[in-house]
Amino acid sequence: MIRTAFAASTLLLAAVPASAQSQQEALDARYNRALAAGYKALMLCGAIANAERNGATRTPESVEQWELTGIQAPHDAIIGTLPYEIVRRPSGQIAHVAVRWADDMPARIAANFGPETGCSVLPIGAPEDSSNPQQPVPISEPAMRIGEEGGLPEGQAGKNLVSAVQGALGGGSYGKGQRTTAVMIRQRGMIVAEGYAEGFSASTPQRTWSVAKSIAATLIGAAVHSGETNVADPIALNYWAAGGETDPRNAITIDHALRMASGRYSDTSGNRTDPLYFGGSTIDETAVNWPALHAPGTVFRYANNDTLLALKGIAQWLSFYPPHLFFAKLGMAQTVAETDIRGDHVMSSQVWSTASDLADFGQLYLSDGVLPSGERVLPEGWAKYVSTPSGPQPDGAFGYGAGFWLMNRTEGVPADTFAAFGNRGQYVVIVPSRGVVIVRRGEDPAGSGFDIAAFTRDVLAALPTS
Image (tube, rainbow, N blue to C red; front, side, top):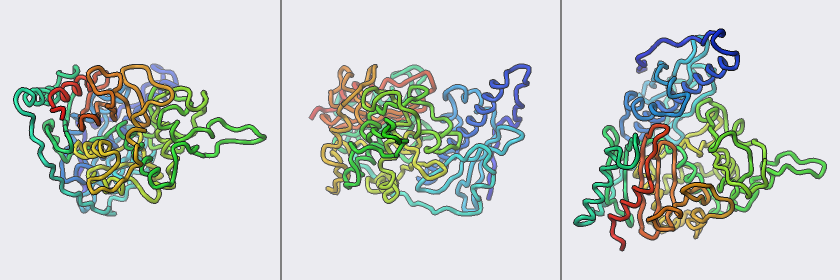
C-alpha cells in the first residue's frame, strides 16, 4: 500500500524573477530550495522509519513540529512550503520520502535502505522510482530493553533531582527557547531519573548530530583494540607526491583528525556540510580533499570533515565490522548509523539513537571499554585517551580531547567530566569520578541553547557522592 501525505501548501514557488535578483542570487536561491527539500525528505524518512524499526511511532506532524522547526537559515524559511509524499512498500515499510521543490526537476528523495543503515538522501535530480518501492527490505527485531531502577535519592536531594529533570522538560529552566525531548540519568549503571516530552518515549530515536563524532571515535577505538590500526598512523589517502615534494596532508594521522587538528581549511567553524548531509553528494566528493593551511597538530579547527577523514583511517576494518555489529554487541539495538549513497557512514552527524542507547554508550566509557559480560571492546585506557587534551585547544567554555568535548573548565563539575555534544541540544555527559551518565535530547531552535553545564551541576548536586 502506498500512503501519501501532502503538506498544507502544494504550490511550488516559481523561481524569483531575474529582474529582482542577479543570476547568482537566483542560482543560490534555487540551490537552497533543493537542499531544504533534501533536509525535509531525510528527516521525515529517518525519524519515521527508524522509530518504526524500534516499535515506536512518529507522525509526519510530529517531525514537522520538532525536527523541521527552528533549524538553520536559510532552510528554516523554505521547508514549510515544500509538499512531500511518503511512499510505503506493500509490507508497510517506508520505501522513500519525496519532497517537491521545483516544477521542472524530480522531487528530492530520501530512500530507506533497511534496518542496518536506515535512510540516505539521493543526489539532486535522482529519479523518483529509484528506491524501488516494490522491493521489501529485511525486518529487524530490536531487542526488548528492561533497565533496573536505581530509585531516586532520598529527601531533599530527590526533590532537587526531580526539579532539575522537570525544569529541563518544561522548558526555560536551562535556556530560553530550549525544547527538551528526553532526559535519562544513570548512576553506577542504574537509572535514577528519566523523562520524555509528549510524543516521545524510551524507544523514540532522534538524529544525534555531532554526538555521532564521539560514536565514530569509539568505533576507531574498537579498531585499535582489534590491532588493525593505531591512532598515530597516517590516514594514508596518498595525496599528491612527486619529484621529492609531498603533500602535507599525507602526514595527517587519525589522532590529528580526532582532535580537530588536521590543519585543513574549512569554510565555516564546524563546516556546514549541507551538500553531503542534504544534497546527496558523497563523503569522497565533499569531505576528504580539503587543502591544508597549517601543519597537522598545530591548529584547532572544529570540522565535520575531520571526523569523516578519521574514519577513512579505519575504512578497511569497517568493511568487515560495520557499525551495526558493534552496536549489537553494546546492546544499542535501537541505534542506526546511516550512510551516503556509496555506503560510507556519515558519522559526523547522521546517526539515529535513543536516550537509553546513548546511556549505554556513556556507560561503556565508565567501564573503560568493558561490557557487563566482561568482554573488552575498547583498548585499556581509551576513556583516558579520548578525554585528555593534547595539542591545540579551542577557545571558549569547553576543552577538546579526541572526539569528545571536555568539561574541565566548567566550574562546579568534576575535572574528569567529558561529553559528546550535538547540534540542537544532544548531550551525553560522562562523569567517571561519580559513576554518572547524563543524557539530554532536544530539538532546540537555532540561536537558542541548553545550558548543559548548569544542568550537569544541578544533577550532580542531587546525586549521592558514594
